[in-house]
Amino acid sequence: MQNWYIRITEENRDELLKWWEDKVDLGDHGDYREPRINEYIMSENPEDNSYYWSQQDTDKYCLYWKKDYELITLEQFRKITNPTQVKTHPEKWYIIATKENFNELNAWRKTVASINYKDFEINHSLLSKHPNDTSYYYGGSVDRLRLDSDFKDYQEITLEQFRQITNSPMSETTAIQISRNLLNEYYEASTNGQKAFLSEHFKLDGSTTVGAIRKLYELACGEWKPKIKANHPDCFEPESKEFDFGKYVANNSKCILKANAGEELGLGNDFIQVRVDKYSTHYHKGFYLSSEYNWELITDNKNEIVLVPTKK
Image: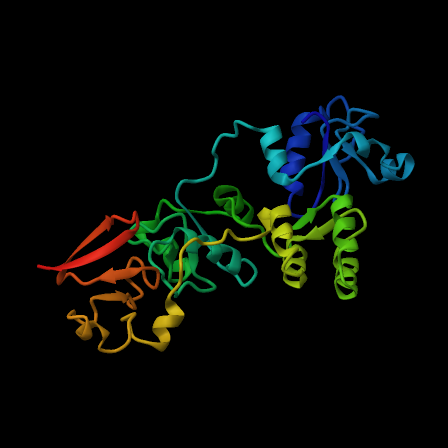
């Protein structure tokens, strides 16, 4: 991609300016001030060597260059400007859960923790990995963590570092920009209520937030929901392919068949069950088979898979 631009926001400003400072020789071009929020970092300014487009330029030239430039995301910016980026983040890290970042941290934790710990809370510390279990968090205070010898090699990271390390879904308030054409497409397909939401939460140039995209998805009809997710995959948590049987076992027992069904079949009542112990590896996620029987998974003469129990 030869010609590109990216809008400067509160969230990405430090990262963009670091690239800009390396690109612009301030010794020779000392008259260039730092780019500001809501201005644009550019692959190249068509008018000068500043590598950004200022508000004054915007007013003067009316952004005529946009037709020849492509608006990119922060992730695209990283790939374009530093495709061989050296990993500079600590291998062992922690980040303190706050009211603002809790949902984002916990969403990632759920994708990596092999045991469904449910006690992760605000003021706990999310970990790159726990040295003694698979919870991925520290349940004590951060002061206690810092004094714990098991965590002496762990370094605290920022939310931005966490997102870079984990490719985490963005937070509700993260600023993004969509194309004007796509915004028009949403607007034309909207009901009056949806049009009012778009007018309030989307600017004319396509500026909006991750939270607004997610809310637009909630307001959309069934036909448009998959389209919105496909257009903005980074704004949504990846869908789990696993099943959750928690609601079923909450209303029944750990056994998945009706009472006495096992006895009627000549088996124990718990010959197949959903595990209700939250410390089990696949808590609420799979079917456990009783060790009182031999189990064989085979393909029968109809080319269908069948699970066959036999007596030991």
